Image 1: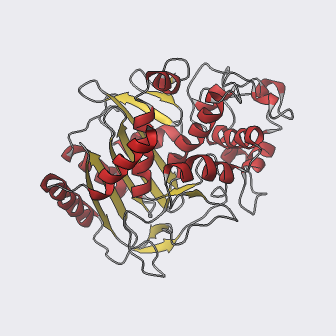
Image 2: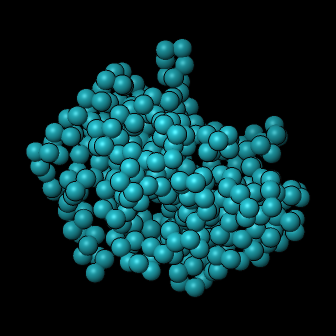
Length: 375
């Protein structure tokens, strides 16, 4: 049944056209060109699926060296948007009774201090673990890119959590690096191989992968940083090699397939309760929760709306998703300035989408404060 639904959904993505969709695409293109006027600089792509109508726009270059243009088929580094894929891998394993989300993590990592090892997989998933931020513990001894296994080594000496386990929300990249390592232990496959075999290939996401030494997308968007009126190549950093917290590369068109699948999956009440029921979600504030790699809020009409962004060297991305409708808005950019915040809010205004509980801040800025734990 799902295969038929996916075929129909994919048909909508690539075959359906309408005057309304064309009009929205023109509006989106105008927004992009107004905000990213440098035709020969890095840029962005916007992809909207609304009432089974696809609208898209893109501008700029994926690579300033090769001069390839950005389009809906160009892979971008997802940064923290990757977390929803890592969480889905854990969901698959739990749903197949291969692990228990209430299992303590020292079952998988016996070298952790007892107070840290008491954290459960569930608490890693919903950021209620209080586990230390590996970025703050790196010091200056690291001269090569970290792996997820390196993250484990970094936190092994840690003797306490930021707060009593399970008592507060604190966003953690460490948590999702450990989740990827758990996927590897349970599946007995490398994390990139597991994701390729069990997620990207079955869904037909042909231009998606976890970037590793063995798997590098080609072509792909390269990251840049604006500096003194020019763009500096800024594609990788010491933390760009970790996978569970930010290693997915995907395209706007592939990502829409993923959201179509997720919408279909969550139409099953049992799956929806598992994914976003009270058992595994955790409050960020009084209006917004977190579960399985997604922030969960309400729009102004009281409808459930999911969202997340990704920020890393050279890349800024953001997505908003209505699981009940399969409606989504995604924007991927290969430049790490904050233009995306205003551009995405302008697109949200055009689509009349408003998320409650942000205290009138731009969504991208609000999320940045969550990641920095400064809210």
